[in-house]
Image (cartoon, rainbow, N blue to C red; front, side):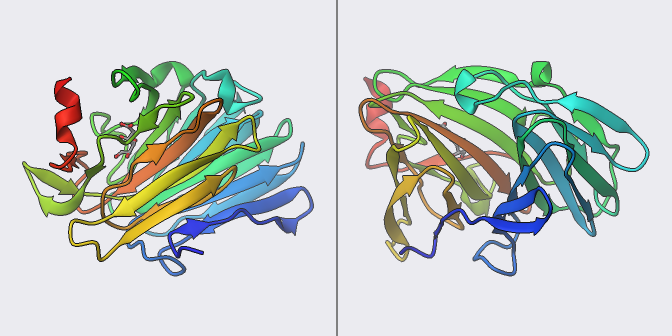
Length: 271
Ligand SMILES: O=C[C@H](O)[C@@H](O)[C@H](O)CC(=O)O
């Protein structure tokens, strides 16, 4: 199996707290991005003390309470399924702070991490704060919820976005990359993809490949999988009949999302 594909696990770390995905800079080829999926039963609590990392806590499904020890944010979350396709609530917590997440209902929480040195204020990113974007044409249409875009100064290095791609469409297509620290042409951002499909037995194909093909992995991706993108183009193809969801975390030396399209396929934008 590709080293860029992480299958979900059921690691119950305490009563009602199950770690489903746990990507760190120590256990992955990523140097900037970290990512967890935590399932919480009602009343179960998960807490962390952050070092020189910032974290965006995303209420993927269900309702949660979040505190950083000073502020309390209650009843966050807007959906029982991501496929309701409504934006959700998130909380940004900066470096050298702690946080605790409590399940109000059965909840799935994404913890999105990146490096942070300069402590910034904790911030509730309400669902209504998400920038909603219909992107693409023909068979490349997708719906984008910008949770923590580079235009939002809340974070030091973290970018978080979720994308819905309909049946028979492609996203992150034409293939693009952001693996060179070469602004203004291109920024260097590592990336993680957390995937879900509807109906849940579905799969999508994701290719991660570099110009020199030193990386060239085409993966069959299923519900709960994480795909790691240390470098390279990273298109996603969605079979007929299914809807794809993914949550992206990006981070790198400069918090700017400036991608570069694969010249071989850029022509499709001119149709
Ligand atoms: O680089 C960002 C990620 O690849 C996705 O968020 C992608 O941009 C989604 C899309 O435009 O299809």
